Length: 372
Image (cartoon, rainbow, N blue to C red; front, side):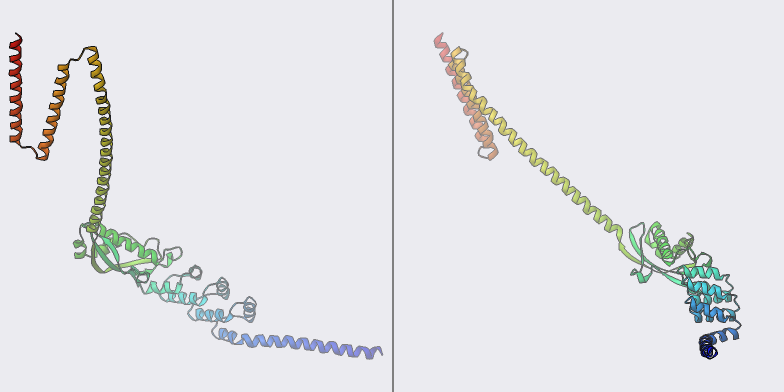
């Protein structure tokens, strides 16, 4: 009975073992089938990539096709790049095919470029393939960049005339300075600054129009490619146009500002004059009030003088005559100003006064003789 009971258990275990081995064999077969094509391609291209390396890539979520094809490309081009290096660059977020193509192009152009340098440039966000191509085949950069919405570099000569220039800068990549080197924007800005400086230092705009190559020579002499990822080969002035007369506009604006300043100063003086006039009017009214007060005290003073015997009746009438004479003279002056009294009328009146004075004098003499 014991032997009969053990036989079915042994059969179950054997069956289970066979099933497990079958599953493992099936999985292994599926893996071989899935990677066989890539493995065979690498094997035939002498870019040895083992099955376990392919399985490891799958587990690390690396695109094994990109790695294998890139290694095949490198081996066929005669480059020594390990699978580990390619896989490491892929995991770092690099563009593996781009780096491999850049290394091949550099090798064909006899440009010294290591995989480590190319990978570093690629991870820095630069297009290493474009850099190598530009190093072999120089490219032309427009200054200013039309894509930024500005067509010309505007500058003003010393005579105040504006010039509008367009430049074309021929550059090639400097592989050694790509890491940490300035980009095209910096180079364009430096060239634009050099053009503005050169035009601004010109005595007049005609000298610039006659010799635009002076701009190229002056800008090239400044060494504007220092610290950039490029080497400037040439700077060509494509076009120079005459713009506006900035000097005249500035002078006109300055004259307008001076006019407004003068208006403000004149308005200030007018306001001060008006204020002074009002002050003087107030002062006149104040003095008139004082005169009126003084005139009001005159009768009281005269009455007091009469009481004390310091003023006689003849003195009083003499004073009245003086007041009347003063009033008459003021009236005559006012009549002269208004044109109501002519010079002949004045002299006639003077004769009448003289005649009256003479008669009074004669009358006074006669009175004196009678008294004698």
